Image 1 (cartoon, helix red, strand yellow):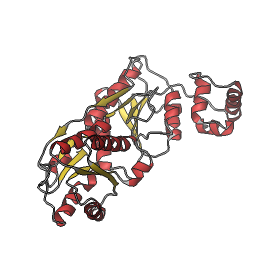
Image 2 (cartoon, rainbow, N blue to C red):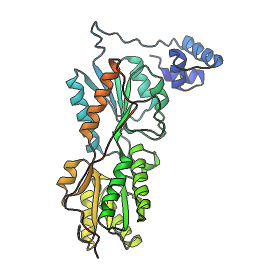
Image 3 (cartoon, one colour):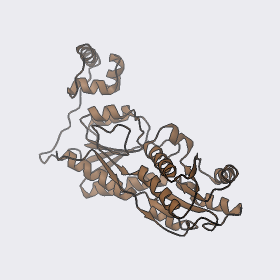
Image 4 (cartoon, one colour):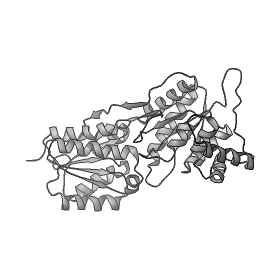
Length: 335
């Protein structure tokens, strides 16, 4: 079957431009439109028109795009997926899971084959290559994540910038003057993943506002990486007394590493985390944390999609305010 990406290659344009040229959603130059139409004729491309039952039910399937890229933490992704499936079933929909990092081609395939009525997109980057096609596609979509330019999109996420600020505010209230952020694996930042970048911005903004010494350390998962980073932190930041961790697999390994290096938590070092609440509560030292509300985000994404399918208006960007829960891992700055 000829795909929209085949037409794009033949015409020398992007898949989103093909979609715009065929749908008329945005103005396209006459020359570009002629090239697209010529490619459509030469390849025999046919746009798919989804058949709907009399009640407008469509395929009763929602697609969930979760690219399993390096640095993605599968247990958290699973929580999101389960919440999407649960909410979709409550609305009478099944869920088609897409895990390949194929970008525009995968979205175009779903749109043109009619396998799903709508799409939930995760692992959103600040300049995500999928955005142009999402804006032009007739397939309704909701992003769990907010790109740098969300115009024309429907997005929902935790306010990760405010989450980073909230963690620093908590440590500053306890008197800490030197803080560090242990962040996601380096490749997450290289991809400019939106939630990770926004949390760094919030962390540094709050630290600067309170005149705290601060530094950001991306870190791979694993006990060896945790031990190496703990040693580096103490070597490079000898006055360090407060740490924010945005890297769920490192939580217990970091606690172990700091204690092996002679630091008591929270007497010598306060730890806060940004992670799902059950993970923070079940850590070897229960962690003060800002909750990542995976279940609520997945449910809200599905509700927004269902509203879009019904033709109801929806907000462009929905940010959930962060909530911090104090546990045993934070205390006053040691004298």
